[in-house]
Image (cartoon, rainbow, N blue to C red):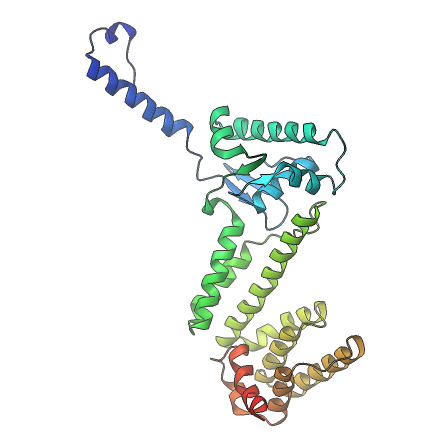
Length: 314
């Protein structure tokens, strides 16, 4: 909208007010809205995508600050907490001033890369709040949020017996991951704990996705993947239970029994305890060729509950 200064004199007060409102609305549309193309990706090495380009900083401490803020997106992170996370619980005396410099650099990155005003970045995107900072992110801009949503939807679908939907959601969730996070930087204590929780959530999603694929008949295809997971997690009982079920349904009951024997030997040697009642019940069901083992509609949890019930009653 273009208005010459000489034309303003002929406008009424109401028309001038309308013009001011239009100009303010136009400015708000162009300056106070982040492009939906902006994405923050944490499920792997840190990536900030905008217009198909990664604009994430390369400096390790800047990346550490960003990762900490993104793991706590839309929540205030105290300056003292950031200092501990970035400087390993032993920040130098100059660290508070250095932290402010790093935040200034991050705001500058957002301004120049996203074409936003300093006022918008400071007040709407990376805010100073109560002795700390908040990074405001829309749910669709953060891969962690999408991952968690898809895992929750897949879990609910699997529980309700909607196996195709469960498999679709869980496959989509796991495709969000581009690699391990834990080895992508030097993390503070709290950040490392949050990353470990995410990695555990990834493993949980992998197990559920295998469950869904097995319920759709993909037992043979899952054997090699489950065998690898069992090797990587030698004391993880659920992974071994799934492997035993997949082997049995693939016509390899003898191999399934070998998995139990090896797992039991490992538990006794390393922990001095027997496998759980549920896994022992699965072993007994395999020995007796219980027909229920072939019902692919049952997830491993449902199956183990069924075959363990008599043992509990006894």
